[in-house]
Length: 114
Length: 110
Image 1 (cartoon, rainbow over the protein chains, first blue to last red):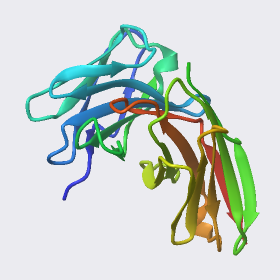
Image 2 (cartoon, rainbow over the protein chains, first blue to last red; image 1 turned 180 degrees about the horizontal axis):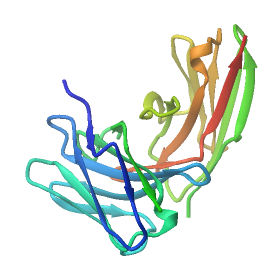
Image 3 (tube, rainbow over the protein chains, first blue to last red; image 1 turned 90 degrees about the horizontal axis):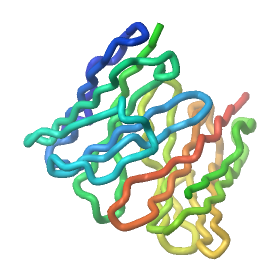
Image 4 (cartoon, rainbow over the protein chains, first blue to last red; image 1 turned 90 degrees about the vertical axis):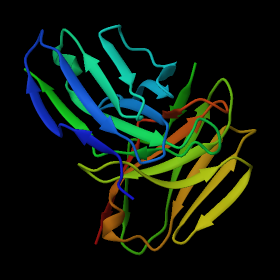
């Protein structure tokens, strides 16, 4: 069974640009969560999508947005990039929102903003 | 709000035992997770506790005390490959996702 796949793995952008990251969850998983990981703050929750609807949202500005498609694939977008947006963006999937809630993580997309 | 605390760094020797503590203050509680993350890799699931007590899985064990808002991960017979970051995470309700602590970097030396 294929794991969670994230693309691109690495990217470099400049301030003011926008970026779109993609995540394909494990087959059959309907919930996709996004996290930002930085050395100082650790893993911070961005948002979670389930059946194409945003179900939970973290404390990030409106520049951070996402969506989920009918095949459960998800994208997140960051507009007007700032230097502080440099981070590893991790996507995680789980079968549904109930049960134990164990998350299965992808390798992440490492974004560098110059 | 949510607050999850764990030590930033720990060091230990190969073959030894190490205990990584985690304390949490959350609005609700529906389970505590431990994840392992090697440098440059994705976090991988280690253990899950929802009831008080000890859960053992090979060389790794995890303990939970809900009344104290406290958990620990116990690693026995340490190996060099155990050098990694260990993340404590809490699920605060039945349908919520996980809130993570900042992680504990464990360095195992020969």
